[in-house]
Picture 1 (tube, rainbow, N blue to C red):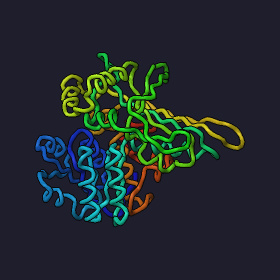
Picture 2 (picture 1 turned 45 degrees about the vertical axis):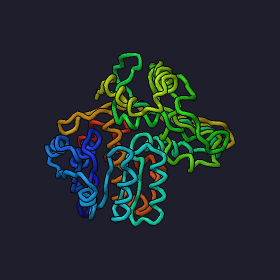
Picture 3 (picture 1 turned 180 degrees about the vertical axis):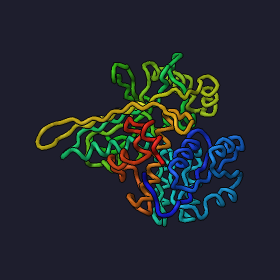
Picture 4 (picture 1 turned 45 degrees about the horizontal axis):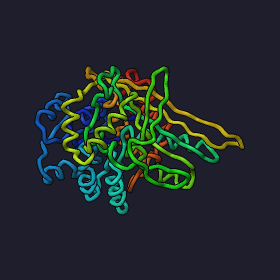
Length: 371
């Protein structure tokens, strides 16, 4: 158990699936005074049933009131709200954490952080987030790093249909990943590569997968490893056949130019599920001690039940990531002001954290003892 000398007052913005999971984890920990703010009364009612304080926010004035005087804000709102909320937090001197996969938003928040009195730490989820911590840990094991390849998938456990996919998180974020340029290091040079390209197939534990370029998963890792690696890339994992259908939709039918329509199509045709699994696979190769060696990291994470509430795998991993970042800042184990990238977090510290332990394959037992 981690106890603080004083209870930190924090605000969670957004009472959707991920915001609810964050509130549940932090409420069970018992070290934070939690306020959850949203514009949807029905969602707030579900959070209030946990015994957590809630507030209805509908404009910038009420949003500012939910931020002022808090120790930290955890932003679970859509990606386009990241920069406005981070701006308010920086002005108020409040620590800021979010889950955005949007590269432009992260760059804007980094610029905001130059003179900030508080921590601004975006991309604290699964990918970007945890996978960057894993990648940096693997990279540090080599005298000379040649390649670092990171693969993550949030997948249905029981896939159906031609796409073999279910919606498990933000549809807007998913479309961003499929459409926006993807950061990478190629032949030692930082660059961008097209989304949906670089298709590869592989098997883990007897299950066949495909993987292809998607945007945002690397966070700031290409900056950290610039000049230190020949090849660094990130790809999303899906079941075979997904990539070909996406190319039909986005390229042949040109739905990449009509993202609102694509969002409506996906949300009306693809069911959501909480019967999901997170697949993580990262591998690095390079020189160590005069020899060419390879190191790998893999994990398979399913959902769990906590305090009578079922958390899907994507809820669990995403919420655990941002709650771990909050914990480490509150403990003074990360910088206390300015921009903080995921690479500042040691993998061992993350996995030893009361929230981060969910990634170590000990989810249910560890989290049940969270308080």
